[in-house]
Length: 551
Image (cartoon, rainbow, N blue to C red):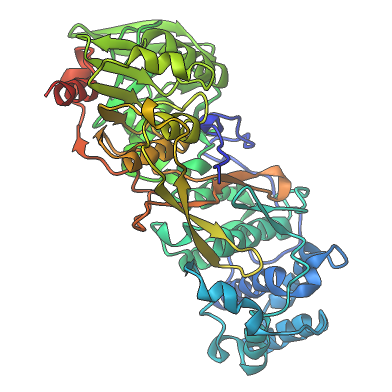
């Protein structure tokens, strides 16, 4: 199977949000919903409703088509949760579920799936008589293995990943019902179809109870949505930097060491410049805002996101405070649209990081230099080298795994990855599917030397998967910093009021079962870049790789 990949440009795509994290909303709510500050019993009723509604949405066979609108069903049930005790609440929900119609339950239908290697991200342990009463819990328990051979109207399987379908993106966040629909839809989609559901910092079971009171408050609706996305701890979902700081950027390629930001390629700023502030905003303020609102997979990626976000602004010209050659300076710099700058920076990297051969013995290329049409010519340049450095601190221009690694670095068929793939007919179930790079068409073309792959937080998604394929080939040493930890095909989230997003919909494991999500790829030789090295314009990761190559 080939992996369908999504460019990391989603990190820079224009957010749907039009407010800052300060969230200065003062408009009064337009609905008559009475629970801006609900009591604990009301929050519990709404949490139970969210769980039951989402479970039924994805499990009841009646939702194979659009005869019943599941969103309207929720809107009808919401007022029924006001001021009800648990017994009455459960009776209301039982009447609703049983009124949807009969279904056939047969666990044998799913026995073949359960006999295959798989993981269950959730078993819906909350379905108990203690919480739901005997009648409702028995009904939902039978529904778990209902015959759903006609599929589900709201979810389908596409390119190894679950894809939300037929979801309304209409409505206004001024309406409490739409806000709760957003929360309930989001939570249940992650509950049943996110392969990394159990990798979040906060247990996913705790999210509903915390966020229901926040989503009932119209005065913080946008910031609540951003915070909810941050709970995913998934860099594939990152999208809010522009909302928080602005869509223009200082046109500079940067990285970080600790809480310090440095320019790594020449342009309007020089390689080695340390950026202290942009219009007075420093690292700490930028970091704190991102930490609350931007989803990232790990702290190293948060550092890179902070360095990038430090450059963002709403202005066409900004004051940039830097240290150059040991002296502080303040420069006035014209900004560019962030999305167009990202495309330009890739082109700059291609030009500045040339394909080369060091000392006639060590080749160097980046993932941006590979094209299928030019692969043979590229490898001819490295024919007499004893080592090849492949710089994956970028997003590959073309897919490299089968046509490049499979043809020039694999001597025989090898398992390089195990996919963790959603089975949409049984929500919460993910089957484990080992995948192999096939035998090369021309084994004589296999590169005989050692391979050294360079990585850092810029290594994300396709770049991480490509690195894993190099590792499976053998004779590979990975050098550098922790990677982005956001691998796997990206699934879109279709949400009310147009506030959609993304998450990693395909799980990516090493052949031995170790997860690459959040952790990133395995690194053989860790290298922590230093402020001193960056200020001097050095590439300490490449320097270490050259040392290894020359040994």
